[in-house]
Length: 176
Image (cartoon, rainbow, N blue to C red; front, top):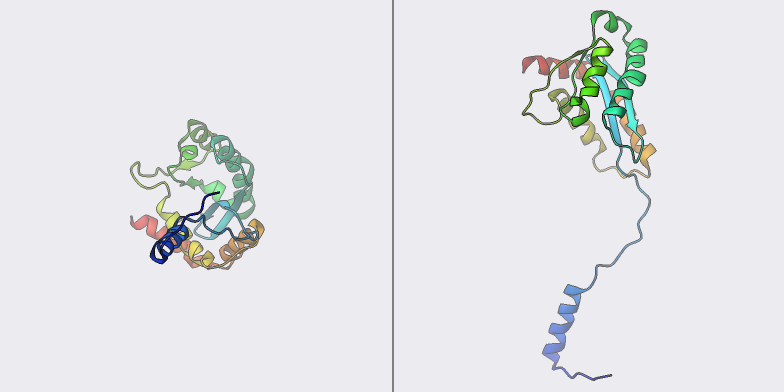
């Protein structure tokens, strides 16, 4: 083992360098919520369906088509039966599962009309900016213990949001 001798000035410089290059201290992590993805379907009267995507799942065309036929259509039948008679007009974003041939075919098969999304615009339609901005604000600064707490908060926010808020989102869409 060798012995190195340093002047006091060298020792201070070496100690400062050691602090700079030292590995960051790891802290014990407490359990918290991970990422929660929700597909929210809404109209001028409010929320029709909230589908929380299970952890580890990807929203691909298969998942989205199943969502439309097995969950959204029954929700529309239950909550807005008159809408099926008038005709459903669906607007969704530009995400690949929304544009997939399989999805377009499913929407046609269900007898719904698809409101086209402008091709060079963001993935989210303008109506989603209206909804998700305030939802995101309501989530700000809150530490959730788990995914279920996040889901409960989202559902409470959507239920508590006034019907006029949802109607205003569609009025803005018409203005565009």
